[in-house]
Image (cartoon, rainbow, N blue to C red; front, side, top):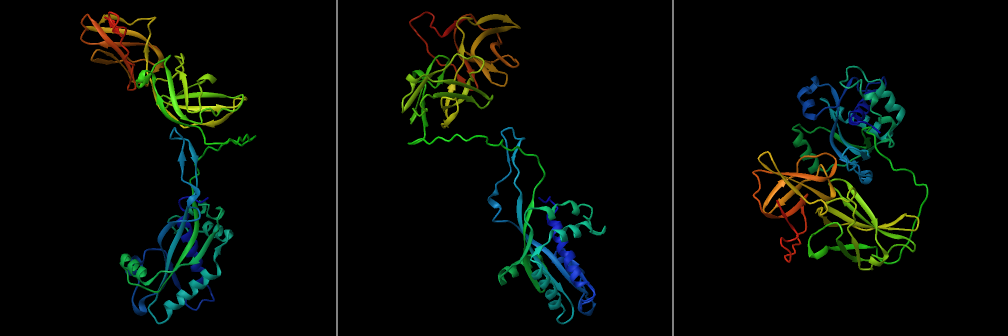
Length: 420
């Protein structure tokens, strides 16, 4: 592939080829200047009448994406934003104006005749010619030391030249925008230039075996989550029901696996659903007791259907379920005076990560957890000023997901209250 200097390289090759055509011993025109700048710059420098020399100007007036290569894809990155997955080339078509400048009769026509004939007889620029020209660019060229490394001669597509057609209105608009007087001009197109940075990218591993399974009927799809007790969050031990279609799609001898993913902390927990909990239109599972691996917060739940060899045969869409923290009843919260306030320490289930936002809500007061590193099930909360003696409704909130409220008013104090 070519690098970012490919456009300059194409213009340099064309400019050199035109110079060889005009300035050879068999030419009847004498000395001809071949330039590659905007027409208004040429017009400002060229003389008038017999004082004007012969000049041909090559002007790249438009660059467009190549239609045949346009669907090759766009550069893409992995979820980390750093790993390049695709590094497709940028394919471009170059649109040129070849303009002749002369001060005597028929000289402009002669200039165009030589140039057009050269382009007609060389519709494809040979790789050897490109390599030779770019390798011998004179040191007066502003990019002479860099053009030889463009890689234009080694790209997959060869450089092809074809005539173009511009209507009267298009020509009029173009020369008006150029702020230059119209001179005899021949438009043509160069295709295709492939540019790409040499960025390292990740390629998928080769496929060693193919295990294709054809299954009749519609694919399994999840519709809606029915949390326990008609509450939004689900805690450890609660039963969650998900409605859908074709949920009994596990192969004979296989299993249905629930995958719970927390995309914020990049934690996944997977477990097998008992066959008795699986129906064609619904599936239910109990939030497992897995403190270290179960992600709390707003999670995505999907189903994996595996065969007897634990190979995944189908992966459903995902639906959102809120997994809340539970306060351990075996280790009740403790309250102690600290720094002019009240320090409450408690144990939660499942564990939380340091990049999660955890709050303890006592009545209507909320305090963020004390800083910690890694994963932990023990949290401390500093309330300032000190809390007054009494009973408070206790709730935990992780990443916006609060602990389910289930108060049993038959007891005194209610089950969801704690005395501090």
